[in-house]
Length: 364
Ligand SMILES: *Cc1c(COP(=O)(O)O)cnc(C)c1O
Image (cartoon, rainbow, N blue to C red):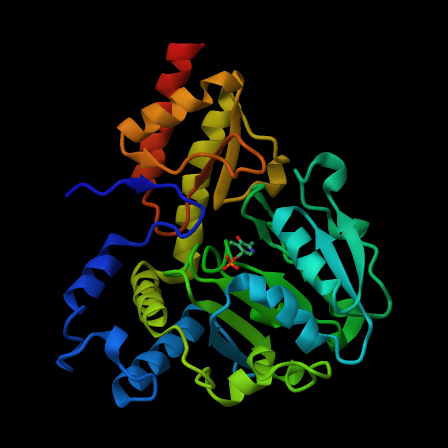
């Protein structure tokens, strides 16, 4: 069976090897004679899976021991409220960087809990760039600084990490890494909290991973429900309630697959090569256009338009005929978007680039 090249932004392509392994273990995981889906989350089988998933994730990302890793449900969208509930710590203000659709959603939720200072925004240029740190106007009284390192819809990525060391350890940097986590090496110590939904670059939908520095735990705002309290999840090793067990297991297979490929250093090289293939073609013809400022182009989500927008339907149709699916841009921005996460093989990108060349020469 030939699998499609799936350019969806999420839920997204998973490594074929991971799916095959999950298939092979579907009815009988490691001689347990049951499926991972059927296991008690507190039983010895799943406990051993969960411990390995966390250990592998920690090793892969390089997470220091003073950070907790939480395996939650609720999506990245729940984190938009959990972040202020857990991090305001009696302060009444927070800094947000507004770089597009996902930043805006995070801001909207935070505004329920505090005064949001938009420390920087790229709205003036239709969210096509990442504001450099010298342009940020941080609030002296902010409890934390939140940004979206990769805007999945706009295709804008911070290819640098903000530096808040001048503020001391007390103003944590918070990052929504839903669509870029595991795509490159990270220095975790620069962050207070990192969160990400799994369904883009880590595994199936239903799992959300939060990495949180220990000294930020235990100071939720009054009235915070238990399920929204990082400390309760941390104290219970993410088993305060039933975690998304099967999604954790599949994510664990993805972590093993990444380690085998050489880890995040190697993935970054591959991701740069894949993104360059696509951007180089877009830039060498005026048939295609990418609106995003060059240094801020996403390695994961590549948005572009056709000079003649009436050809978009034909473009998508012909792409599908060649096995390339879900290239339609987000409904809010239109155009084309190719999401090329870790699990998209370079052959997929090369096939797309060949098709784009041909389509341009046939329609120019
Ligand atoms: C997809 C996405 C979200 C929303 O994730 P859910 O798991 O659907 O809540 C949030 N932020 C970013 C950057 C995303 O790409």
